[in-house]
Image 1 (tube, rainbow over the protein chains, first blue to last red):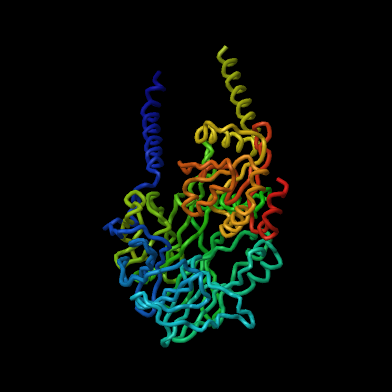
Image 2 (cartoon, chains in turn red, brown):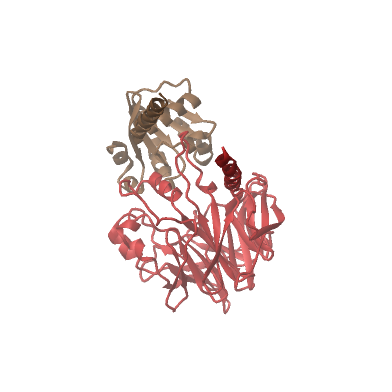
Amino acid sequence: MNKMKIISPFLFLFLLFLSQCFYCFSQDNDSFADQKIIPIDTLTIPHEITMPASLYSSEYNTQINYYFIEENDSIKFVYCVDSIMPTSKFYIKEPLNSYLAINKEKIIVRYYSSKDYLVMNNQSMIIDTLNNNLKIGDNSNIIISSFYYQFPIQCKNGEYLVYTELFEPKKDVIFNLDYRKKYYSLPPISEIKITADDISFSKSFGEYPEKYRSEKGMYMSMFFTSINKNNEVFISFYEIDSFYVAKSEKPTLKFPFKSKFKTSPFHFPDSIDIRDPYNQSLIASENIGYTYNFFDSYREQYYIVVNHPQKYENEDGTLSDLSRCPWSIIVINKDFKQVDEIEMPKHLDKHKIFIIPEGIAVSDYSLSSEEETVFVVLKIKQYE
Amino acid sequence: MKKRIILIIILFIAVGSQISAQETVLEKRTRFFNNYMKEIFPDFQITDGEYFFILPGGCVPCTKAALRFLLGNTHEMTNRFQAVLFSQKTLKHLSDTIKTLHPTTLIDTTNKLDRMAFGMYGIGILKIKNQKIIGIKNLTINDYEQGIIYFLNKEY
């Protein structure tokens, strides 16, 4: 009996401890618990936005943000300098094959109905047609993939350089190992030069990870880019725990990083067919994946968005929504050193992120609707 | 007595977990499919044969091109499949003409179909025998390159 009396307070404390632990876990990361990011404001765009991008621009020496909206039954491309509010808008009258966001005064569009690259001004008038010299060697059958990831554009001596991936429109070869070995031995970043009259391929640089050329890496292809003030392209890869810093005519630098939530290497079971798109989604969902990266030109640091694993198939037979998986942001400082990882609340949309002077603007699912996109502005410190 | 009861409970749990562990992937998909059909299309009688699904994802250009081809071969579709299934949301992205692919077209107005774990993506086909799924296939880029008829005839 006496023993019980002694144990009881400990038991009580232990239960209290357990309940505290349970409470912490049950917060399901829906609040800004760790105070590394502090919500300071909300901003509302009176439209649903799609395909957002946030990049440093050497022309304006600051951050530019752009996205598409549907306004008055038409599609508009919105270009913003230092803000997420429109600096200029461009009317897109037809489905786009590709586009290049040059600056606040002009964009280049290529409609599906034509092979021409057209220069559009901010009055939405076509003011020029560029000579299409986009060819590598004798091969003119190459395309720009504008809708794959944000691609940096820099202004240099009045000409524009676009850093993007160029490829031949071959669909059947992605799972052909010989082709992959050849293709992924070429540099991923292509420099496209745009002058007043023409658009042409200039040179390539950077490299793909070794894994892309191996049997195990057959499904790998997704990489993401941003650019810093030194014209260095920051490249991260969906499955790889390294980011690359590539610059034209310089060796590519490789830096390690890793999410603290990653407990095992990116894994896909040998028993499943990776060519099956269902299985690719399953693999993507149940592994840690690194997606968009951003250079924050105000605080001189980089962010890599991390998708956390979640079970793909639920017990009730439904699939988990990949876009709603838990996520975090890895912070890389100006010296390319991983300095932090911040867990993000689940009600924020990892696909709609902009960098603005006040911090990071992230769309909030719970506040947004089909009529408007509401952003929470998160203050983030400048890391040493 | 107490020990015996505990032992029985443990045995019960062990046997139960064994039984559930033995459910194969196709059995699990069958369970999902049957529950889904009961909920969304309660009046539809599932019969043996193949079912054609149009879902989000997969190779989107392949899906569009395949549907263009199949819309010109609805006779083939009618003979081959028991039904065509897609969601209301899919109709927003594809032409209304997909309603004419088959005389039995099941449109899920709740859009739950697009979130179901049937093991399919884009264009997929389920084969049913004795109320059970015995095969699932998805249209891949490689299949599409070899022709839609190749895909339709491809073994599960």
